[in-house]
Length: 261
Image (tube, rainbow, N blue to C red; front, side):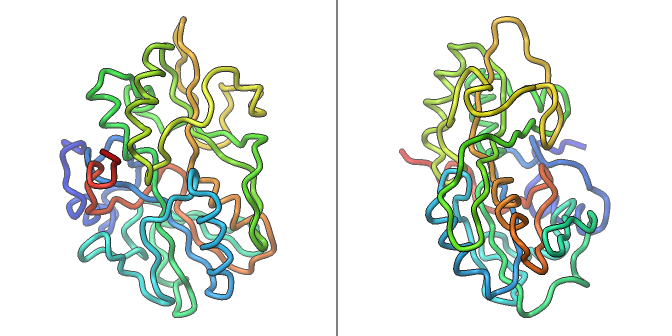
């Protein structure tokens, strides 16, 4: 299957019918992918404010009214069925991963879709910058850092980052390219020594898969929407649904539509 050239509606149909449950990195090239957070409406304002205060890891693409599962950024889509994997949390503890959340969703739930760095990977590849997790058929490497987000109400997580190894010259080019993608995390937040942001071992990511780092390459780190998962599970919130890291919602928005010219 030529997954790179699938259009989002085709991928969402595959997901909805149980034919696709893999990570979405490299899929539907050129279309914006999104992190998902669904939480009770009484927490929605503080979470919205948290996202506004922390736009690098949590850039807002869409916010839905309570009980509405159909986003404006994807025609005919349903957030209850159209992600490959979801995580369900109760009182901060993950209860499991599922491929359909219809039975958990109710009219008190507010859904947030937040930008994802998968959306700029095609631009990197076109510029000759390697995206190692795509080359190796893996989920992207994600790490919890020692950088604290701006808190709001019950939400006060550390920043989570994705990592892509490349040469120093490629890192400069990647910075130039991704700076334009302000709604999908923008420019890197750190380049080089992982210990400076609290990462001790690149071969053991907190989420996703480790990737090969070749001689002469350096790690380049971008803010990651998985920060939102840490935010909504860091306090005793009774019930939360999120995407499973790397298993994103693919919208109908085009990457280039969200860039700064």
